[in-house]
Image 1: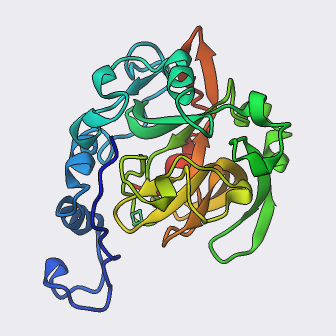
Image 2: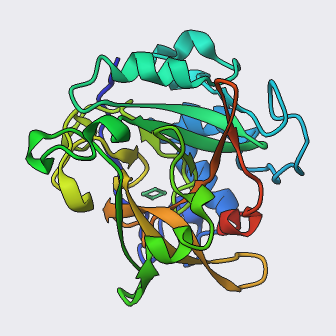
Length: 283
Ligand code: FES
């Protein structure tokens, strides 16, 4: 069941907020402390044990269920989501198919843990909807041009998927790394009730509401159906890297969220670990 929260504005670097002392720079520890005071704090804290301090486990490490498997994560606020009773169980495609059948857009999403980091898995009934008119509001994946945080075009999603087709969502499923590119909060799937989380869909990754990943910290929106090439920076060494991602459609987040390529193990959903550099923009 969706909840309603009052959103918090982005913390100002200039206001000398006592929460940050006299420093004009917010470090991650300060931000997390700030974040935990928000309505999303319980969720952030519950995932924080795994997410904020986690390093990506090596391929073959146990992430729950099987090697590289994704498990549902419904601790905290998300225990009231449709997958609340599935906490820590392996994610299966059928779970999403069943939930998407209740959606007017043919979509379903859930929070999970993969390789020790938070993810959002979204099912889009692409195969059924891809050849229907976009005006019917039925979601499908769209491959798009991508831009860096300055707005400079960096390439098309197909530039990447042509080199490695595994990047394209598999079996109507996309796994998205669950750390916001603004300040590394964990976006959710329709836990908040607003126009961006309605069960509606519009084409081209536009910011006119519906079926978005929503980051409650400062209201960034990401369209899981809009696939693009993206660019970000490794926090440890400063290196810039391009990645396949989903489009940021609004809010302060500068760029979209990385995709984790999907592989199926029977009906269980797994992630491919070839692209660990893509997830280095948060500590
Ligand atoms: S952390 Fe600020 S919008 Fe996500």
